[in-house]
Length: 231
Image 1: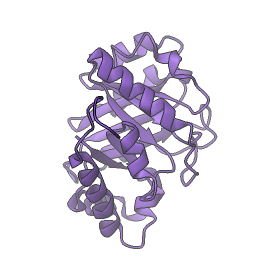
Image 2 (image 1 turned 60 degrees about the vertical axis):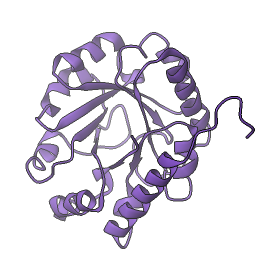
Image 3 (image 1 turned 180 degrees about the horizontal axis):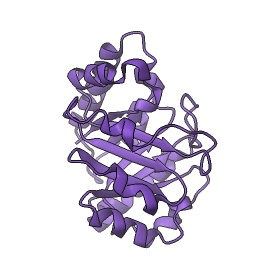
């Protein structure tokens, strides 16, 4: 299933609940929660209190992305009845397997993210443990950056591994995604799309979400070529 996860990092916090309501009504699927600590990434965003303020104001599940040092210490703070994913960075975890198991013990799905400069091979021994892999297509820390093209090969490799091994992890992509490149990202193998400034920076947020979800639906319904068919 293709899912759109608007990132509230780019939302107007003076009317956060209202804007989340707009994207939900327009057809978004997840609330992407970018948590930054000013240490692992060069910026500070918000903590669990802001996310929890949305509880009961939206039915969309929370997709929590911890861009922080020592994520094991704080993961439990982001567990609510609406939390679906908590994702940690491979680069921030001293004991990644332990961190993933810690998240699962909290009763939510566990994800792992890798930065643009991190090889996919860093996940060789954890892919069978995770529920989602988040490919960063920008260097984390700021919204509104340009998509890094090398992310496409990582997405394609993750999809190939998933198909070959029968693993069931979701493939999420975050950074620089807009209406012009979302088709390429999904065609490479992603099924969860994070969009921040391209959604909340639009003059008409409702219309922009509908454009995104319309594209995702259209791409998801396109017939796939078998290996023996001509391309």
